[in-house]
Image (cartoon, rainbow, N blue to C red; front, side, top):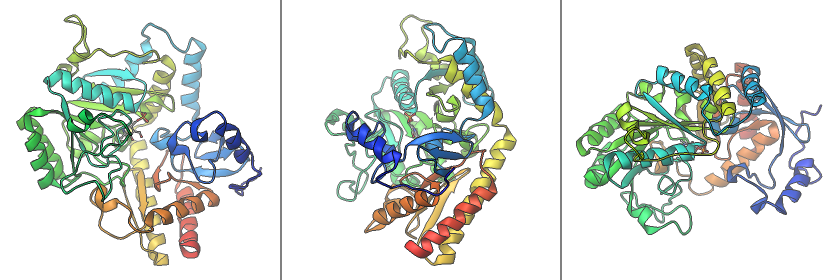
Length: 439
Ligand SMILES: Cc1ncc(COP(=O)(O)O)c(C=O)c1O
């Protein structure tokens, strides 16, 4: 079996598949994030920390389907649980015991969570949480962090890719999708990550028009820069004063702590969104919160204030795989993943020091990101690549793929319990070689 990469070989099976795909899929793909120039690498199979592509090339998977595979690929306990469930019927227009068990686990682990409503993705979870906060407060507007990714709901994607040409001084609400209604921009307030003074002023200006303040304690797209304690206490204080709900997006951040990222960061949210790891590699999402906050989903008084449903919601395959995954995430497993992340940040930073290439490594827990500049990073704007940094980032991403290491196109990594320090050391050595010879 070949371990030497043959991508991007125009005669490869990946190239052939891409040609076929372009005839039936817009741009040849189903997910924008899977696109890599000149053509995507097609996965053949996953084995623990490794993806073997359709041409037989092995690569270390440091992306793990954008943080959803916390135990890597095809972990036996997870696949056994999913297979057992599927054998008994993959979905029903009836509840199953599996959804109760996964909800119980989340309620046991995360202090603010007393009730859970499942759905099918992180996008849906964020949409449902925002709608729940609106139903709960009787207000329409929401506030979000500039540049933070929360999925594809119109309001949540405002100012996702704003640029120096349109971002303004205090963040403008910038359209992400063409044709998104003006009303969406008017109803979405954008504030800067970790800039306590500016964010407080912006949030207080919006005041009682706000239903919710949507936060991620370490937003992935600009390098998982953790919220400062000062910023967290400002959010808590302002939300209380203006009567807005706090929604913490733990779609990725749940991988930061056994009791949730909220326990680690001292955040007391009204609503929490989950997805990714709680489905064990199968489609899932959830909104959770206190009994009072979640009452908007309940039909106890007649039609719920925030009705929610979905054909595949809480299907037993996702629920069972998710439960098996989360049961394997013991406090010890969280600690090991944190240590691996710490090691990866150290190894990557050492590669920059050793080669003298300008760059830095950010991140928290078992995730990290590489930036090809040395400006201090605190938020979306300070992480924003300038000059040829984006092009150099793309070149580094491709060079790593060719060397056998998969990071996201924006050079972020989400580690799994299937990885070892030896894997990370191999990555560090490859990074150093590439920086020295190609950057
Ligand atoms: C923080 C965060 N929220 C929400 C989402 C959307 O989740 P999904 O892709 O399951 O819709 C993502 C996806 O990467 C995310 O990272």
